[in-house]
Image (tube, rainbow, N blue to C red; front, side, top):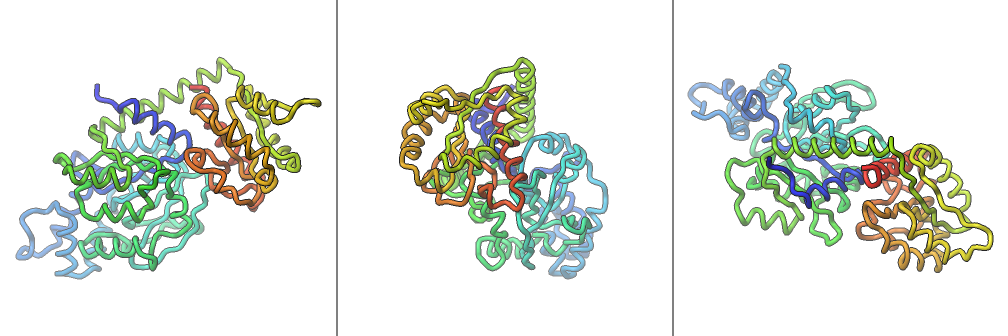
Length: 443
């Protein structure tokens, strides 16, 4: 049976574990009765054209939408689109499998909201927002929100307002015609109406992207990926795609995306890929539950400056449920210990090392030396996980670079003391540590 290569799965698995996998769904993913939703919508719009102006083929959505706007105006197009989406569109098996996977962010670049319907079907809590290329739509992305965040990049027919709890008509946001595509790309890569900064800050080099439903020979994707924050930085994480085109990708296309955006194209069809991805993730979590029942003792080490005893005490309170549930033993220093030598020895015997990063930590030359020489070299997935915890504001970025950036806590990289509710921050930290325990040591 065709399946994901082990090397690819290892990296995808780590992205799941680190909560850094972003799902991007394109216009050529959702099907109903074997036909793409985009093609069905094009056929629906095709009937609105006068006979003398109606082309013979009806499946090119961009062309049909452009003709309808030219002949009858944008309002006619929007009414026809609204009528199409008033029907109940069934959720496919593939959408259902994706909805059951733990994506923190889903970028929806199709015109339909089938992924939201799938999330509803599987009782997954989510927040949705949209990009409106004609009218700036500001919002604040909250990385500490436990819900899945769905961002409708090509607009949406209806979008639920998170504050009011109402569903509003947002037809004007849809990218439908060729002219819309040009304007969309122009705005999304410029500063006037770009994607809100709070979301762009989250779509950074630490994220791994999974693209489904795109034909990468389409011209606009070269700029779209730039607008989403993908880069060729040496520290950028690799991303994956299953091309939706019917023909084999142009060699020049694969070279461009692999060199410019570290994008790896998987030689699997989407159905096979999604089924195997879901199967592997399910097996991984099942093994975790089995290992949890059997019980394993894990050792942890908290490395901190003595002036931050208060921060350490708060962290230990947050760890208390995990210490009982997972036999997580936090190693302590005893009176008379040679501090640095003991810490170095304990670090070698720890599955988790938690440096508490504060201004006091950064000002301690012995701790910095210990961090670089003894702690960072131990960071090995499945053996020892170094997870720096940002306790208070400080110049921590020069200290933490490379892969360890993906392990920094809290998830939104906001120091605990800067949160409106520090207790919520410690909860975020504990939840992320629990995920790492399950993935790395109980699977």
